[in-house]
Structures are given as C-alpha cells and as structure tokens.
Amino acid sequence: MTSETARLEAFSDGVFAIAITLLILEIKIPSSGSGDLAQELARQWPSYLAFFISFAFIGIMWINHHRLFTHIRRADDMLLIINLGLMFGVCIIPFTTAVLAAHLGHPGARTAVVVYDSAYLCIAVFFNLLWRYAASRDGHLLADNVDREAAEKITRQYNYGPLAYAIAIALAWVSITASLVINLVLALFFAIPPHVATRTVPARNVNR
Image 1: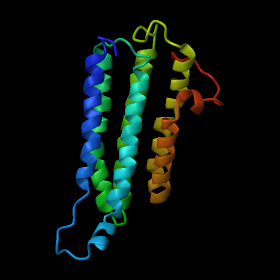
Image 2: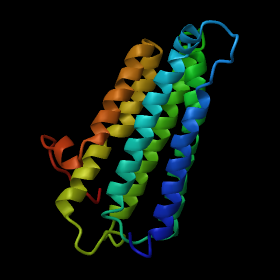
Image 3: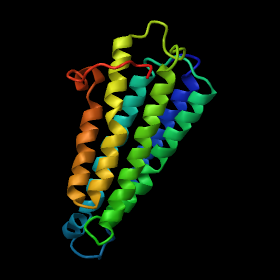
C-alpha cells in the first residue's frame, strides 16, 4: 500500500474486520435447561445460514476492495468520501443479517430479504462509484504503470452488480429462495478474478 492510500486501506480493513466479527454475535448459545441441546441448536438454522452468507459476502467484498487498491495508488477528498459511503454499507450488514436470521421462515421473511438485498445494492453502487471515479478522466488516481486491460475488466465485471441486486430485490416478492440464490451466485461471480469473470464479455472504454 502507498503512503497516499495507507490510512484509507487500514481504516477500511478495520471496518471489514469488525463487521465480519460482529456477525457471530447473532448466533446465540442455548441456555442450560431450555430443552434438548441438539434441537435448540438446530432451531437456529436461519442464523447459521445468514451468518454463512454474510461472512462469505463480506470476505469477498474485502477481496474486491484489495483488488481495487492494487490499481488505485493515490487518494483525494472525493475518493475518501465515496469510500466512506462504501464502509457505511459494510457496517449495516451485521444488522441486516440479524433481521434476516430473525425472520427467515416467518411471515416477515420477504421484507427481511428485501432489506438484506437493499444493503448489497447500496454496496454495489458505491463499489462502482469508487472504481469509476478512480479510473475516470485521466486516471490520475491509478498507478502510473496500471494495466489498462486489467482495469477495463474490473469495470466490466462491476457493471453487473447494481442491476443484478435490483433484480434480486424485485424477485424477493415472488420467491424468497430465488432471491437468496441470486445473492449466492453474485457472491461467487465477484469472488472470481475479473480477468476470468469477463473473459467472454465485450470490451468497453474504462473511462466511461
């Protein structure tokens, strides 16, 4: 990490670390005397599912943030502000995860999934803003020796995020399961390195 982005990256890493750690706090330990322990643990399956999905998502977001800052070597005020917006989205994931865990399998499940998906839509928008701002104009925030082809592949991969999460939100009103499956597919897609994920996608200008 460069001196210009060191504090931004260190701060962001701290936010990711705290958010991913807070997820486990929503999984409660059954009290002694509350019944059969195995059954009590099994009843918490929504919490386990929500924890697994959100842990994977935050981990993948951290990987993508790291990937971006292998290309972004300078920071200005606007980049810092956009990154704060992204960190805001990351911070609310433990809350939306808790909402999903509490209501999955109950009457409020659909609303919980919409809230959950909306947080990821927000994050996808800020990831796009962060990268597009850094790569815009003359790319003055990027490394001097940046691989333009690699940068373009990041742009193409990120293009899918906001629309796909918007579709997941709309689909939640039809099928909760399908909406969550889209989330998992998107997590896998963004875990793939951009040069693999965009191998068959037509190229566009990175500065658009």
